[in-house]
Image (cartoon, rainbow over all chains, first blue to last red; front, side):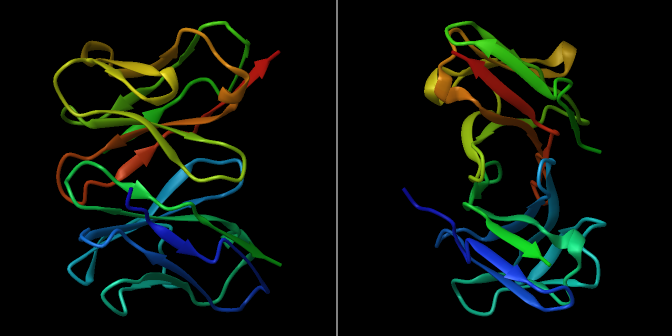
Length: 112
Length: 114
């Protein structure tokens, strides 16, 4: 069964450093998403992306965050200058049909 | 705006007992509804989904859920819980237009007693 692949599975970084989380969506999917889950809390929507542009973003997705589809397969989330509160599990998702998102296994980010 | 309420933060049941996890949603129309399960440190696994039609939907691992429009609810049930069902369960509502994003509830952590 096709999967959404995320790398790295776990990244530890120092506060203020830039981080890039990578995702390979399912190949024929056109819509991409990033979600965040702070430890012990709910999964929160960050951003959706379609046709090489952001289609919707939440208030969490401030100027420190950016997304990019640098080539035909990768979808990245960049955090420009990490803060302690950015420590979370980040989930990538993609969809083809209007109603089913497929989630990756997540990338755990720890900011020290 | 979409919202999801899972009123039970923690639930403890004995192995073999029945289970019902509650989920209430707010959405302007009939939304897409989902239940996901997350084991510690793991990703999100889809248990079941509702789009339209039969209001009782069957999922994996013996779970089922019933959509009740009048109550804006989508409760998850299992007749006999197994120790391996201990995990966190998230209800989600999916928009039926626009970006089709999901909004998740706060989750219910299930503990199973042997």
